[in-house]
Image (cartoon, rainbow, N blue to C red):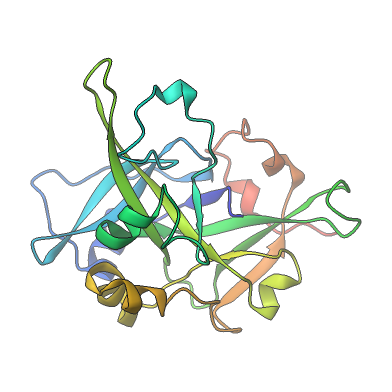
Length: 230
């Protein structure tokens, strides 16, 4: 499970990296070193042969949900690669609404003494310093009581490579630039072929402060990603 990540890139960086469509107003992208589920996150959406930057809630609500948001108790900010194509919540978005989720890095927790033992957070980034692109899906839900429409997304996770397995038993599906179009516009078989662990040399990691263990920790705190000595 991946439940926390960072955003520390500029519009200029992602505009060039993803070849984004330029809107009239350039977004003011602020760093956040503690992005948590249910917050608004950046996503890259294919639209009319181009890519646009959008904002969505990070915790997918399926279009078919017919109760209130408060009653939605399912954990849907991650979608497992093994079941995304068959899940009652994820199957339709996987077929029709795939997108790219840019992140600067993500946190994962290591528990050497077992599930109930102390948790040491690690920070993962791309080894080449580029923006990390996570395979994601999205859906739009309508609140029947208010008619409010909410777009929300989930990142796809898979089994880890050996490098990540030293810390955790899952990892996000990380896409390379050459794979973007296949994920966005390919059929489900084409997309499924990309849902695999990243190459062993794709990432780097280091231990960070346990202050990030709390979702309440200020996202403005850039020291959250600094290496600590164990």
